[in-house]
Length: 300
Image 1: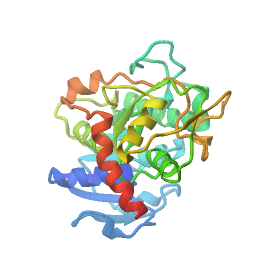
Image 2 (image 1 turned 135 degrees about the horizontal axis):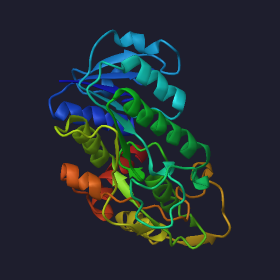
Image 3 (image 1 turned 180 degrees about the horizontal axis):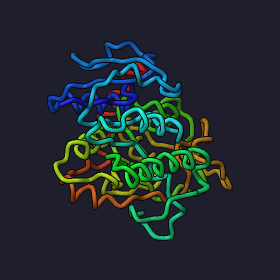
Image 4 (image 1 turned 60 degrees about the horizontal axis):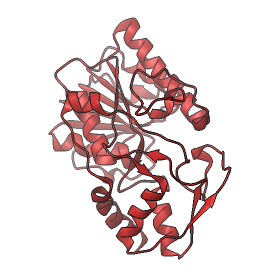
């Protein structure tokens, strides 16, 4: 069986590549080649090209793929180029979406039936990702493009290039206070990167028809921002000092060095994915141990 991973050189994409190898698939990655090809498991075929350029996908030749996982589409034009290039030669196309594509919810957890955006909290990021989703759903409705959308909440794990876990551990290691927005009591949800990769591959290879559907991939438990800091601190044996910053209204992707999450509830209903794949999710305290081992090695 042949898999194509768009992206694949770091964090989520690289974990998807590893997961496909674990289940015995032949894997091709398509990206700009900014990282050495030896980051991939042996046997991975690396094809380099800039997906923003029309015609870049011609570097893949005429190969047909049983499954494509797109981990690197952030703008609708990127998704449209992939649809045009791969139409008719992909068995299933799994797209990495996000819970940021919905309108602001009044009821939690958010279900897949929640209307799509805009959600002002997420700004341009959410708007562009929403349009990617809409293009895929339109392509499925018009000509049966086999798209499946996976929407995670906040993703944690070894190799995370977003300063989430590392932000807290860095400040604790320097003896600095943790600045949290407002009272830090909002409930948020996580998923570990290996759990997300299993969902991508599981939906991409599932024998039942799942095309044209969206699935949430997040943990069973919810944490406050304060609770997340406390969980990180326990691994270091540290006692965090929290300082509340009031009226902080910028979107989470504009937080800079402040704090990696806004003080706004963000919880996705994972029941459809669990019913379809029978997956389970690790508690935050359990999963963070592996991430902390990676962090210590990174900072050594």
